[in-house]
Image (cartoon, rainbow, N blue to C red; front, side, top):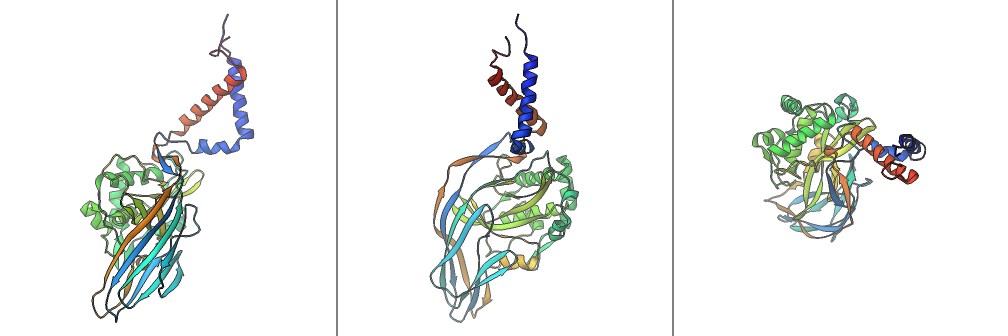
Length: 376
C-alpha cells in the first residue's frame, strides 16, 4: 500500500533550515532583500572616454575664469578622471567634497578636456517591506538638507510651498513609510510632468515652484521639484550633478540622491526623474544606479557652494563674451550584461521566505530520499 512520506519530508525541511542557519549565514541577505517581479539588465561596466570642448569668444582685454569640476573620487561606482589637451594656465581648488580647476582666459580660446571613466552599476538593498518612517532618519541629515536652497539668490528649492501638496500625494498613495512616500512623489512627477532636454550650467534654471506651475522642466528643474516636495515631508533629498550617456552621447545631467531608513540600516540611493517620463511607470529610475552616469558633485545643502558649482564662468570683459560647451568626440565600451532587480516591484517578504524554503526543501528532499512523486 502506498502512503505519503510525511515524516521524511518534515525531517528534510527541518534539516535544511538548520543547515541554512549553521553553514550559510550569508544567505540571509537574500531573505532580507527579496528579488522583484520586474528586473532590468545593465552592462557590468561601461568604460571609455569623451572629449569636452568649451569655446570662449571674447576680446583681448577680457579676464575670464572658467571652472571645470573633476569627477567625484573615492566612490565605489566610478573611476573617472580628466586631463587637458593643450597647455592652459589654471589653479586647482579643493573644498566641500569637490575638486575643480579654474582656468584663466584672456582671449578667445578652445578648451579641450578628456574625460576617461570606468563605471559600474549599483543596486540598493531597499524595499517597501523593510522601510521605516521619517522619524528614523538621522537628525544631522535633516539639519543639512531640510531647508530652502538658493542659486545666485533665486530660491530654486522651496519646501514650504509644497507641504500640503506633498502630503496629499502620499496620502492618496496610502504611503506608510519613507520608501512608499518617496516612490509616491517619484511616480507623481513621472506621470504628470514633461521633460525637456535643456539642462546646462550656462542657463538660469526655473525654480521648483515655476516647474510645478509649468508642469515641465529639464533634469535639474525636475530634481529641484522633487527635492522641494521630499523636504516638505521631512525627508532629506539633494541633487547630484554630472554626466549621462544616452542616445545622443554624453551630456550634462542632474538627478536626486536621498535616503531610506530600513531595518538593516540607513541606505543612500539615487532617483532619476527623467528616465521614464511619459512611459509606463516601471520604477527603473527609482533607487537603481545604472552604469551610464558620472557624478561630479553632490549638493551639500549650502547655497553658496551650490551657486559656485553651477557657475561655469565668471570675470570681466570690455565687451560681450560668448561661451559654448559641447562633447565633440567619444568612445564607449560595455561589459557583459547583468540582471538588476527593481526595488519598487519587490516581492513581499513573507511570500519569498515561505516560497524559498519550500522550494529548496523539496529539492533537498528529492536528492536525499529519491522518492517517486513523494510516494512509495
